[in-house]
Structures are given as C-alpha cells and as structure tokens.
Image 1: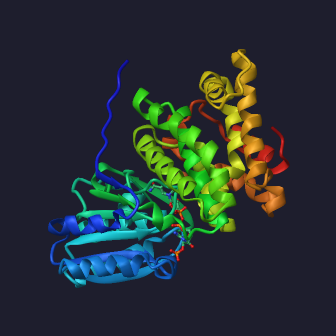
Image 2: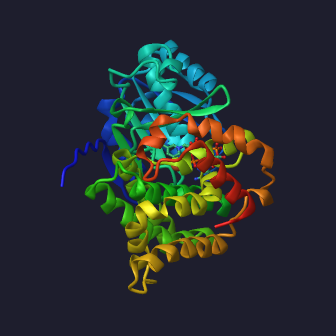
Length: 383
Ligand code: NAP
Ligand code: FE
C-alpha cells in the first residue's frame, strides 16, 4: 500500500452549528465579505441569522449577493474587486456549491488580481487565499471541503485545483438544507453520488478516499429517496448533507472523472444543473469503465445487499441498481428525452477529449471515439 493524502479544513457539523461563526471572529478580521446567491439564503432566513451573529461579535461585512448557478469569471472578478475596494480581510460563503466556488475564485482574485491564468492552467497558485469560511446550503458538491473551484470561462467550465483554496473552516448546519425543493435535493444529491462513484473508480483513489466513497454510496442510496420525497425529513436531509461532505473529502484525494468532464458541456449549452447533467451520463460511462473497475462495482452491489456471489454478474448488477435508483428519483435516462441535439455530440466529445487531466485519472482512458460512443449511448439509452 502506498499513498499520499492531504486533507485540510476545520469542520463543524451539527444542527444549529451556524452559531459557530461567533467562535471564528479572530479569523474574520475587522471586515468580511459575505458571498451568496440572489435569493435562497434570504428566503430561508439563513443570511439574516448569519448577519445577526456577525453583529453580535462586532465584525463588519460587505454583502456580495450576485452569485448564480455555474459562476462566471466576470462575476468572480467583480466580487474580487468588491473585496479589495472595501479592504475585506476574510470571506464567508453561504449557499450552494456555486457560491462557495465563487468565493474561492474571489479569494484568488484578492491575492493575484486575476483569475483566468489559473483557470486556463497558465499559472499555478503559490499563495493561500484569505481566510475562507464555507457554509453550504445544498447537499451535493462538497465544495466546503474540497480543493477545487469550477468557474465558467468562455463557455467552458474550468477548474482550479489547489490546496491553497480549500476553505479554512466548513460550517455544516443541516437546518440550512431544509428549504431545498425536491428537484434541488435530487440534482445536488446525485452530484454527491457521482463524486462517490467517480472517486471510487478513479485511478487517484486511495484506501482512505475509498472509505469515504463506500460510506457515501451507502448513505445516499438509503437517504436520497427519502430526502427527495419529503421536505420535513430532517434525518434524511442531515445524512445527505453528511454524505456530500465526505464525498468532497474523497474527491479531494481521488479526483472525479469523465462523468464530470462530459457533464460540463451539457450544463453550459443546455443549462442543466450540474448533478442532473452528471446523472444523464453515469450509467453509460460506468458501462464503459466496467472492465477496468468490475471488482469495485461488484463490491458496491454487495454493500447494498444485492450480491449473487459472482463478481461479474454483481458488477453488471451495479448498473441495474443505478438505473432503478434513477426511476425512484424520477430522473431521465436519455439525452434525447431532455432535448439534447445529437449533432452537438461530436463537439462535446472533442472538448472532453482535450482534457488531459481527466483522461489521466479515468480508470479506462477513452479515445475520442469512445467518448462520442458514450454520448451516443446516453442519447439513445443504450446500456
Ligand atoms: P448551486 O448552483 O449552488 O445552486 C442551485 C440552486 O439552488 C440555486 O438556484 C440556489 O439558489 C438554490 N439553493 C441553494 N441552496 C438552497 C436551499 N437551501 N434552499 C433552496 N434553494 C437553494 O448548486 P450546487 O449543486 O450546490 O452547486 C453547483 C456548482 O458547484 C456547479 O458550478 C458545479 O460545477 C460546482 N461543483 C463544485 C465542486 C467543487 O469541489 N468545488 C464539486 C462539484 C460541483 P440561490 O442562487 O438563490 O442561492
Ligand atoms: Fe460534481
């Protein structure tokens, strides 16, 4: 056994834990930048509660509440300028993965006064961003504990991966997830599942990341349908929140894979939520990867209690379990039924094929033709 694992960040988890922000005052400085979306944290009351706590400890704040799903370079630069103009000393991100990712990008801008060179891999970070506290309100990305930020630049979703952007503190208060609608629960929850599965199958996986991955799969399988079905099921919401966080720790070690790479163009072109786009691809990508990862797929089948004792049929069964799970969650199974145009698939495949990092960590490195075939199978529903 041989591995190198770096996990960072101080995690507070628990009902009502938003109040932990008061214990972090010395990390916030005199003035902090709150980064959040346009509506949900106002409607749920989360933002006003946070502001109340900041007032209690005498920390001033500037509110940057312009984050939309799949944040762009432009909005990150605007936030970075607000940070600098106001002399902010720290950042609090409260919201979904988009707000947390944007906050990481704003942190990069605050230090370097630019972000694009890092996204296009022209430069790498060599300095830590200002203190960042991440307070997630969705159960999907795990961004509150990951070393990634995903920002849209020139119609492409690009990533920065660096330990210098991992949040210093993650405050996970499951009450903040109670306001999610069923569709947000589902689309973010399936993102967490895609992290757990891609993380397990990635060649960057280690025994430690696998611990998180198998545990996250078990929890998501049990609790996502409950969380989707019923708004008031606190236990299910809490467990999904936990699972998405541990899957975040997992992918910080293992990376994700081509499900993510192939999902990005679908989100950019068609506006599908990130997790929903991943869901459209998972069964087809995993069918392609099955010969390289059948033992892990069989192990998942066993963990979920459906094993037959034969490793090859158990690996195949994993795909059936996934598809049955989609039915419970009312997820579509083909690109065709959600209006994707078949003629877009070659350009999407080109874009994914150019991503060297994804190909490196994929358990079965795909050629251009393989990627196109996976898209076509997903289009037609051929597993
Ligand atoms: P999101 O884009 O942050 O939010 C989706 C929607 O959910 C928004 O309309 C938001 O409204 C709403 N919302 C958030 N919390 C809510 C709540 N508690 N109640 C009601 N509505 C709520 O969704 P996300 O899936 O969490 O984040 C997706 C982004 O993260 C993508 O850009 C993806 O690429 C990225 N991602 C990052 C990582 C990473 O490691 N950094 C990993 C995976 C994915 P408001 O806008 O009004 O708040
Ligand atoms: Fe994701």
